[in-house]
Length: 319
Image 1 (cartoon, rainbow, N blue to C red):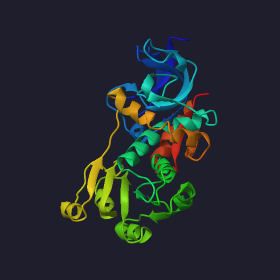
Image 2 (image 1 turned 90 degrees about the vertical axis):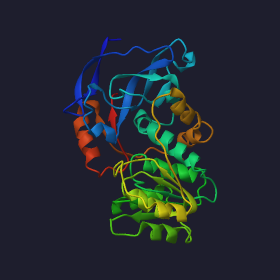
Image 3 (image 1 turned 90 degrees about the horizontal axis):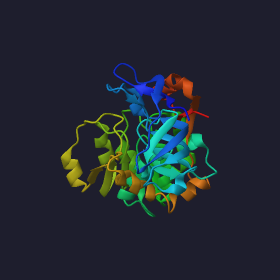
């Protein structure tokens, strides 16, 4: 194996610059993966300021395992999350990868890890199950499309999905949404969600927008409902009427799953084993890919992601 690899580096002035970097060496609890596909995420759109290999979501083949990593992982097809994913070789903690079912391509697998970990973790936190009504905002986003499918897998009785794009309504319905609300900025989300849930509102809300839209998510929750802030597509700051929160006895939580400590993401991936991975294998849950590009064409892929028109994930192929 060569001592160098091609990698996209994010720096002060540009989000992605293709260059050569040394091949990383796995630590005692890490694995080395030959990348076959990688996915782009919103964080890849912005220059980082400090030069580093960009990306964090990938799929590929394990070619080396550290002394304290499971030896049986050598040669496994995996998907995972690790910093520096937009490169020909990635190093990851062994608990941050999941074996990919043979029925799933590398391209599909690369687009799933973040959505699976985040959405399943949030839905589990909200105790979604049979007879639970769920609202998922920005449901046509890269992780939202998986959230809709997971809510259906967990048995949610009613799934309400929001999108800004009328043309994405049919996709969300195909994925399991019982009602789709097209948000235009002048509608009443709470009223539309109550209409779709028999007047009650959503028992669990997964909000991917944040900003001032978080107030709409709280208003759409049922009395005693759970609002879980997952994403910040609309910004990290917003105004919220605390009296509305109190009067409706709504519990507001926020989730953010990082790479440290390894047990956090590792536990989330372990939670996928009983039901979610089999559902991926038999296509009850599927990757939703808007478009895929060659590794050398990452800038075109970034433009597609930045357009806001992508229905699902944008991927890069390294095969």
